[in-house]
Image (tube, rainbow, N blue to C red):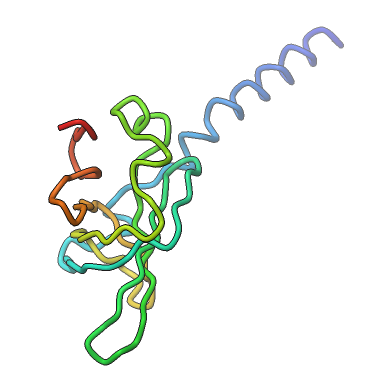
Length: 134
């Protein structure tokens, strides 16, 4: 009886460990609105290399003088690293142009499906299978 209970408990724990990461990931269309594209130019103020995505924070001064900080979602750190990204590919203070999709929540400053272009025209972040060295 004890052996059977142990096997069932172990199987349950294994199932939780395998299924939790899959449930944590989200669909792009669940968070971002394909009907709300955005493009802006601003200065990088922070970069977060976190799982499951990296985030590049870009500060933009709008026409009315207000400063807005957008949070641009990128891919998983491991995937970006394999494509040639490094933590210093983009630097604090770099001026970049971002195109992407706004979040479905109107007040949110999150941007998804983004492409980041450096001031010298280099695409270092993109929607597709872009590599830093391209």
